[in-house]
Length: 366
Image (tube, one colour):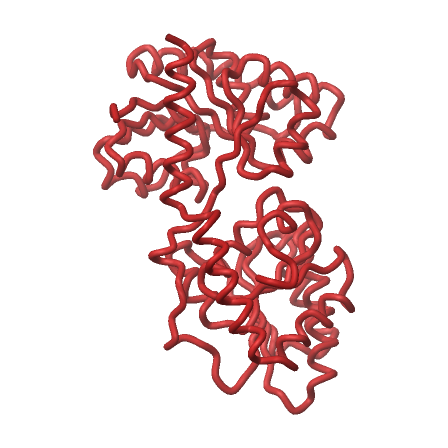
């Protein structure tokens, strides 16, 4: 297939951006990455990736989006010089606005999550801005069906699914890292209220009290504004010695994390696509998740993991307890999870799907 010139409008520092850009570049495509935020040196080893940044922060509200008008001339100049085959903006409310204002076609718009679930509620104008951006787009992409349904509130166009899966050659079981002699609960999430870290800590307290003869630990990976609050919660529950806040973890180290815990628990209030569950399942680590939309799509309840109601420490604790009481359940669900990821969320297949969408929208423009 013909190698493409792709204009990619997205945050250069975001892990999802990095994965998409690298995968597309390694397929031999030429990429212009246009980012509002500054970039790090991640892209330095990719000679076919040109990074253009604006070095400015933009407020998430609608008024903050007005600053995009000051960036559009720079974007138009870059597009004219690069002359891409297709432009893909990632995040409907921000880079989607830039894409819409650029006037470039074919224009592919990828929704991510908070741009659809949260942004429309900031102000009445938020809904109008999304509708405008979708009208300008030639194709709309979503990583999940549940997020596509949410997106359909603002457009009557078809929405195509491009899952954000995992590299199953990296995310796989490692027998040498499996926990021995203790039961370890793991969590990888931003330390902010929507991700239910407080619920997990309270659930873990119930588990600890019910199993005094078992050595247990809770490992929490991630950074965020509420770390001190969660540390104080663990301290108030007399869990400070066995709840470890390990801070930010790089993507390349995540397979080791999922292999070193007995169960991965994520009980978010909302989730557009449950990538943490997919990553854990790929490593044959069973999961306990909330019934947030993104998790209910990727987790096969009772087969690859256990889904519990949001904001329910008791139900979360009961689900964790099942893996303590039935050690073989971890192996069975772990195996099933791996098979599900291979079938639906193999990263190489997902990249193929993204490219297929590019080719289709390019051909439709001819």
